[in-house]
View 1: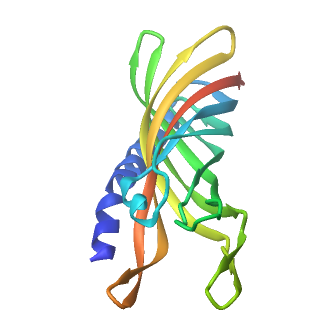
View 2: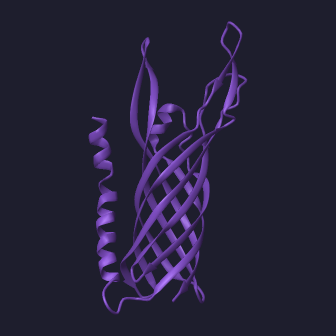
View 3: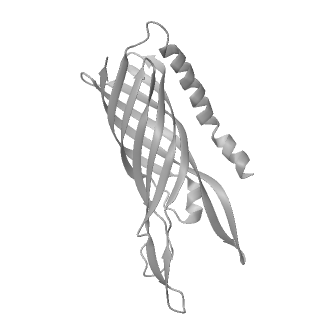
Amino acid sequence: MTGARTDARLLPVTCALVLLLAGAARAAEPGADPRYVGLSLLAGTTQPVAALADYQWNVRPHAAWGIQAMAGRGPLGVGLRLWRTSTTQSLGLAGTSDPRVTSTSLEVVGRARVAHWRSLEGVLLASGGRLALRYHPDRITVDSGGGPLEVAFAPITEWVAGAGLGLRAPLVRNWNLGLETERRFFSLDTAHRSGSAVLFARETFGDWPVRLALEHAWGW
């Protein structure tokens, strides 16, 4: 059941990749636009999906930032993106601070122009890479009734994939401004209590990043 749900949620990513390949074919045609490279500063928010609230994550939007390097030709671009944000996970333990969960991802990003009106561009996005989750602090001490007990939060590294839409517009000279939103998917091993039993499963979660990108581009 979990596998079927994962496949359905990855459908937008598959569609995005197909359109990006179509953009690549167009970019290879004679007379295509010049090649370019671009470097962007990213700022925005990331909101975890509501399902993570079942595991005491704070699912309100949180500030996020990153950097991105792109290269491309014509309507197609590809590059690398670093994106970082954090939230908290409630432990429900009196006298114990809730740990902060920091999320850092390094992803390959594809971008294809699918619409153009005057100087405004509509783009389709697809991404995939690795996601690292780290707890701060990563160790706490709790009173188990028989004495202090140290609990460690192991670091988590998982695959992440996403698809989204964006708008780009030129500012001055070689500067561009972009606004994009994306739906990303990742899986986590989970454990929760059902009566007297503890159930273990692997579930698909995700988040909703919204980014503002300030890009400087060089053409050749």
